Amino acid sequence: MFIYSYPDEFESTRIIGERQCKKAVELFDKASEQLKGKVDYRHAYLNFSSLEVSLPKVGGGQEVVKTCPAAMGFSFAAGTPDGLGAFDFNQGDDKGNAFWRVVRNLIRTLSQEQVKCQLPKPILLDTGETKKPYDWAPSILPVQILQIGQLVILSVPGEFTTMAGRRLRDAVKTVLTSKGHGKFDSNVHIVIAGLTNTYSQYVTTIEEYRVQRYEGASTLYGPHTLDAYIQEFKKLAAALISGQAVEPGLPLPDLLDKQISLLPPVVVDATPFGVNFGDVKTDIPSNSTFKKGQLVTVTFWSACPRNDLMTEGTFALVEILQNQNKWAPAYDDDDFSLRFKWSGLATLSPESFATLEWRIPASAVSGVYRINHFGASKSLLGSISHFTGSSSAFVVA
Image (cartoon, rainbow, N blue to C red; front, side, top):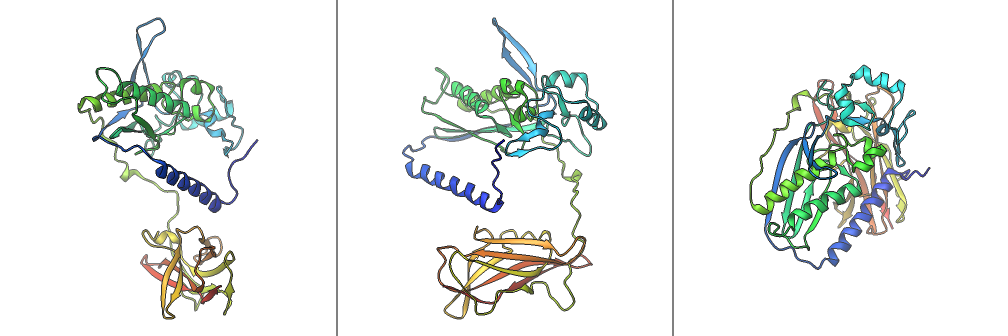
């Protein structure tokens, strides 16, 4: 079995981001078509736990089916090749197993209506009907269509498989370009923006759903989930070209007062006797000179980063000396060359340290540098105090 995850998460992130950036720049530079026309949108909230969907019947006519309250299938727990699950779960499982059914029933006993609605998915977690401490899965979802000239964006609150996305785009294009009603020509560009405004797992085609691999088992609202999206986006597209308003739909539940966290709070931060927060624990050797490509490492006595996430700030900063008397910022912790690693000294110990690693880029300017650490400590009384520490200066040749 192939495992596609990269062992170094820092490097994996850099590779993915760099490739996306290069492709985005390439597409931008090659763009030749100007967007012309109005900017418009339609948006609605829909209850996907019981949405009626009209489908054509074999031999003619229509039949009405419904989506289901959200549920996760057994194959969801199997994961995928790039992120395998645990225990004895397997992809393509349309039966489940006795042990995990017992575990499931300890959480919630399934209704026969839900079992029948979700077929052929065997339900592992009945997330749509489990309400404590609050809903385990959303019922009300936002759907939105945006127009920027001849570009139309379908904002969906989930991950569509390739074929599911194609079917949705084709259905919307049929409405937008239909003779007598459509206001777009065949040159309309329809794209899907996934994971928009909320998250509701995967959306597969009916054929993919029947196979019950990871994506089908993660399609929450039953076998007609994609049909529901197609139906509702066709309505939004029709309203967009006709200029008509759409019903805003049900309001989203406010769960702010119901939130819980299993992450224990920061109780207190401490340093050894005679040591201050921000003091250097392991410094760079004095009078050091480094070449580009080498790694510079310094460790500071620190405090839990959750005390202040340094939004719009930084935990780590590399500065260069200018004009022999002024330090100027050169790199911070949003640069891939500079890494901030925090660790507690021991389990349950209030003492901690931060290791800052700078892999000197080939583009770095030769000169004198130093590495700074910024943080915030929490006292036993709960007050937060910010601190700064600096390494010894060193030369980059």
